[in-house]
Image 1 (cartoon, helix red, strand yellow):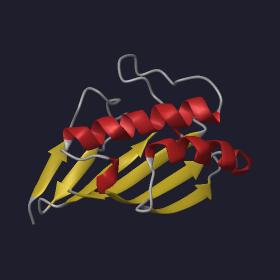
Image 2 (cartoon, rainbow, N blue to C red; image 1 turned 90 degrees about the horizontal axis):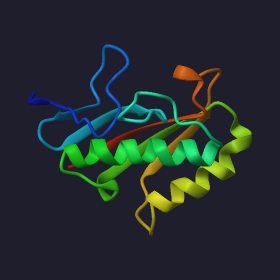
Image 3 (tube, helix red, strand yellow; image 1 turned 90 degrees about the vertical axis):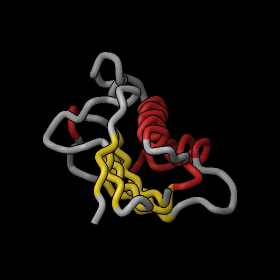
Length: 128
């Protein structure tokens, strides 16, 4: 199996022993979950769930672009929310990034806690 590590300084550096993304066999991209960290400072983006979701998806976009992909290549997302009551607000921002009839498959779950006490984390799988 061919395995390539994807890195970009346009998204936050990993805060643990993991890669931003891994491309396997040249066609599948597994991107680690992104939280709303500012890529330049490494600090958590403050604000409501919509501000944090926008920051997360901009980080995802940077990782996708580093792999030569876009949101159109994404086939599956997993959204982790600290509070499921914020689903509708998160979903409104999510819909700005994933549009049209070919949105990816998605799972959304509420979790007890996210790194740095973020409100949202999103991971993606893409076909590139």
